[in-house]
Length: 190
Ligand code: G4P
Ligand code: NA
Ligand code: NA
Image (cartoon, rainbow, N blue to C red; front, side, top):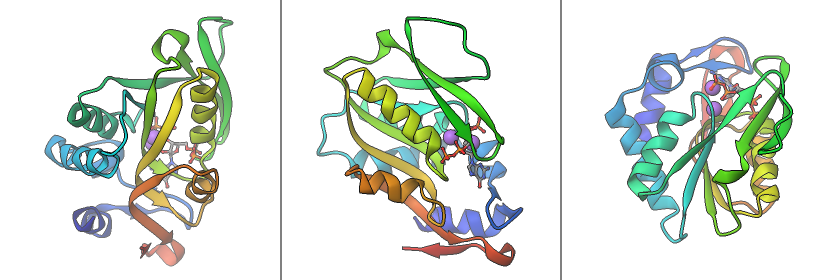
């Protein structure tokens, strides 16, 4: 997506060779019309599937996941992140490490919200090592639902998350892939 690449070139801040800040257009502020364009992209890339739900993890994946769900005409489920776990048997919980936050969190989805008949599309803003994605996929499996694919706005291809999902046989559609952030420069890959 050219517009996304332009926004990254003009507005993103590379803060290390691992981390890029995209607060003006993805992680802290969004243009709703642009989010709808991204949602339309994902809806069209997965249009051959009979998707019943879109799923993401709070917080900054929610806007693009909402846009995708709106285009598809299906509900959006956003997994919650909690630092501490209250023993709740109505929740499917997975513990995941967080790359940027340097800590472990629990992600959880209510058992009520996913069932064996669900065909689920995972949408997220960024994939890094894919730890959160892996946790969410386990939750989808435990619910007996089917994961039909993953739509990612920005794949940091120098980290292993996207490759891991593809190697697991999942259809991954990334709108932009970043090959490296070395020397404060964003290098895209196709
Ligand atoms: P992973 O699943 O791919 O391994 O990523 P991880 O859990 O480590 O990511 C934790 C959070 O950090 C995620 O946001 C993810 O989007 C974000 N993140 C990873 N790399 C970058 C980066 O280069 N820049 C920015 N800005 N964020 C990055 P989250 O947990 O959903 O948190 P939030 O949405 O509440 O901020
Ligand atoms: Na984020
Ligand atoms: Na996210």
